[in-house]
View (cartoon, rainbow, N blue to C red):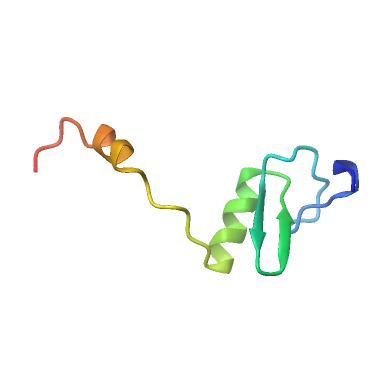
Length: 65
């Protein structure tokens, strides 16, 4: 299936880039933008992977415990 044939699984707009997709129990879902992907995850209860310890450490520099 070509990208031009895909429509967003949330808002039904055409999917022009393959950057926003997720695999679910129902199959591969495609989205037109990061916003639609995020809303789908929120509504479907899908959580993002936890942040890596190095990312959390970099963001907490300068904070006092």
